[in-house]
Amino acid sequence: MAQIVWHLLSNRWNSAITEYALSLSLALQQHSSYQEVFTPLAGSPAESRAQILKLKTSSLSGFSLANICHFRALARRIKPTLIIAYGGPEASLCRFLPGSQPYRIIRFRGIPLSQRFKQLPFLFTLGHAHLQALIAPNRGITAQLQALSHSLPVSCLPLGMSSDIFKYYDAHPRRPELLLVGRFDPVKGHGEFLKLFAESLRTWRFFVRPVLHLVGEPANISSEEIRRLIAENGLTIGGEVLLSDFRLRNLPQLMSTATLGVISSLGSEYICRVAEEFLLCGTPLFLSGAGATKEVLFANAGSCYAGKSCAEATKLLEQDFIKAWQETTEERREREQSAQKLYSLAAMAKSFLEALSPSSS
Image (cartoon, rainbow, N blue to C red):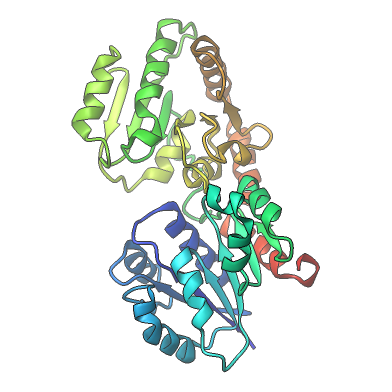
């Protein structure tokens, strides 16, 4: 008989945690031993995306104690055997599940623990006493949880992406392009990388010169501000820089034909969605090292310029570009295949099943 897995997501944004919850639902959906029910916040991007993905969806208008009756009614109707809570509010609500059947509750943590838990570890113990397991998207957060959780099993479970969508596309010739994908926000490091790119062009010696393609939508930085940053660094749109400040439909193909994928973030990046997408498309990475991005690297997957001087970083950028520009189709396909073993939906499901096995408890 199939286990009913109930995914609880209070996130109100189209964030990396939303991506993680949807991906794990899709990954487990591929196994006949599981039936998925996805309960996002009503009216959230997660709700609309879950419906588009044809996940069985039962939304909740809120995850506070004011919604406890609706939550308990949903639980009685769904009758889950396994519950995955992706945030604090939904994990807290799980304390009030109706007691008619046993539950196994797993808490996902997608961001590092606060100092409060480190200074007052008993708060962590109290807040997690009703749970049966913890999962995290990277080794850093996993280690933090293991340091505080002496009885709960903790598993590292990286994000998985659809390898039917993010894959190596060999339909077009590779372009001499550095591709930076991410919303226009200070944390994504556009301004800092534009300075690095401008400096690299001043010392560039290889006969093929790259263009920097910025792809993203305005968030905490406007398109006008991005244009100003480009001009301030002596660069021109349509010359050294391409700007796509709107949602692209052909992003996987664009990632596949780029020479290098750039992750220039200054913080965050604990789930590393974009980094994984580049690797699944066969494209090597040039990383700032923010968050857990260095963890996604494997042999021949790219490099990191964290801690390097501007001169060292520009030299590394040119070296990486030359190497990537001269790659063969076979090398790109090998990178794609290596990434699929780590970051596909199938890999995510396999890691989850291993985390649930008795030997992991």
